[in-house]
Length: 117
Length: 114
Image (cartoon, rainbow over all chains, first blue to last red; front, side, top):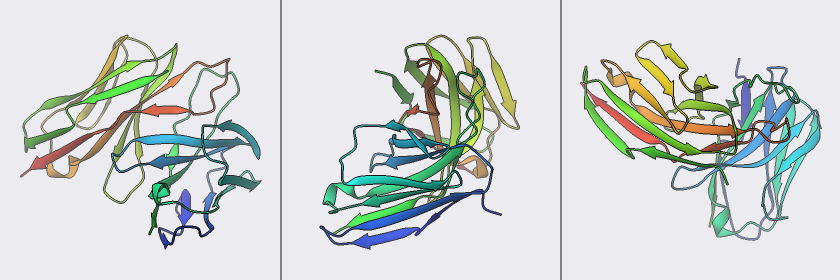
């Protein structure tokens, strides 16, 4: 069974369109994330949710809106897509404990390659 | 701002030729340093977490070490299946909760030739 699954794997769309990426985890984790990997392979955090509550919201355009219907799902909706949004988007999850010394590692999905033309 | 720099950007080895990858970091209080492996078309796969200087962890042909300023990933007698991009990331202490905000380096692309 896939621990963190994302759909779709590939997404090709035109500028100005609105698209969504879905993510589900079956690990029972409390925290989920969206990371963006650019053409130079840098992974940067965009958002994190803990038990459906938005915890981290990095400097991301308002066109990006995450939604977490329950702690096993975190979707990413992108409005008015731009050429610069082309990248690979990774969903991840972990079992975080507030203030705890122990970090559970992030488990990543296999990514969604978004191409905006 | 937390920063992670990995070197070299790319490394080509012959099978059995041991080497090390470097990860230099600056962080406002280290909560943890992570090593991941990423294969083409896949998400990063967790390898190790290191928490304090002097700590070492091993897994098969890989050994990760940590100092106050850098971490090394030593690869002993590598095999072609070890070919991948190796990513280093740090997590800073931030008010007791940081919820997994990792700052990643750009990775080292390792190619092991048979």
